[in-house]
Length: 169
Image 1: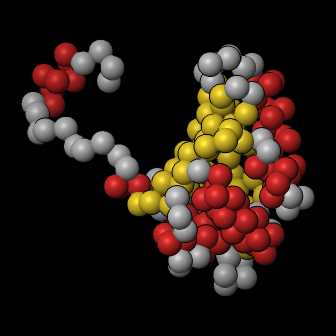
Image 2: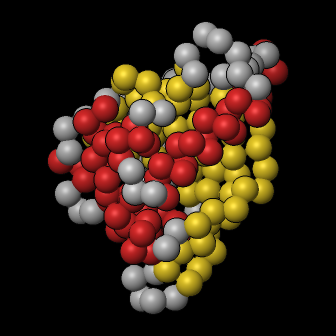
């Protein structure tokens, strides 16, 4: 997997986001790998494959246009293949108020494209995202409940001893 600089990641994200704001679904998807994987843990969704991600973006684009969604980056952190972004997000609620929410997203890159995203949202933006995706979103092929995709829980343990022995904590 090739390493990307922050500038390379931000340039690709700029192309991706410009396509989103222009409501250009094909250009948005052109920035993604063939089999992208998205997760929205706050609202419990796992989204996998071009068709499912296409439908996700189609719904998000339409909803973002109606809700006039806009984000301001607060911080970026990177590894060789990932960028984390914390941001304020501004949008109109169903009740007609303009509010500020927050999100944190981990964007993964592979071969010069976006492999996927994991987006965590505060409660106000989670509610807006749920509205944008719609009540039938779980019926979209390629969309699964996240709880069905995560590893099973580890057995109960002596947490203090396990923490001290685990170098990956």
